[in-house]
Image (cartoon, rainbow, N blue to C red):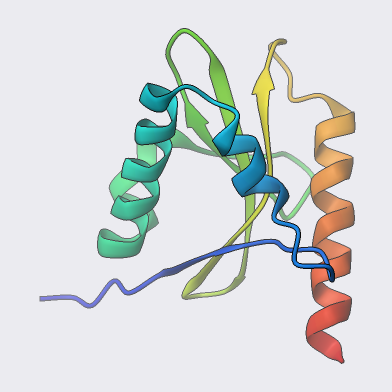
Length: 119
């Protein structure tokens, strides 16, 4: 049997604030459960286990986990290492295209994370 150990890591600011977790905490318990079930599958079975729920964001190193239903919830992440999924940003998508503002938030957090890892 293959070992799919993947670690889901939340982006945190230097003051330990966790914006993705804070976003998830604002959602309903049903939405909350959907997100954590998907993240559990990622940790147990790898990203391929949630294939219908992931999509590459064109022209960026970013990917998004898509939680569909009454709300189109998105969690933007990156794969800085083969066994790490770094969650950068969460939002409710209201348009067909991922808004540039949301992508920029995730890219800025990625830069912050990379600079903190380099120290």
